[in-house]
Length: 76
Image (cartoon, rainbow, N blue to C red; front, top):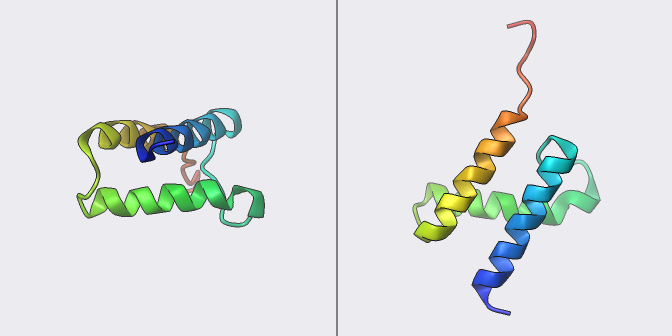
């Protein structure tokens, strides 16, 4: 398996998790740590501008999906 294939599989896993649970992986649940670590590492790569263009497009779409389910404080 190449790195690109592994990256795509992990991206699909996180995407499916967000679609199913309507939230991002939590740092408080041990079973979600692998997804969370993958998400954090790729967010760092994106911020450092070290991500490949084809990965960047998919990852930005994933972040938009997560942001869509982000809850807003009702008392603001």
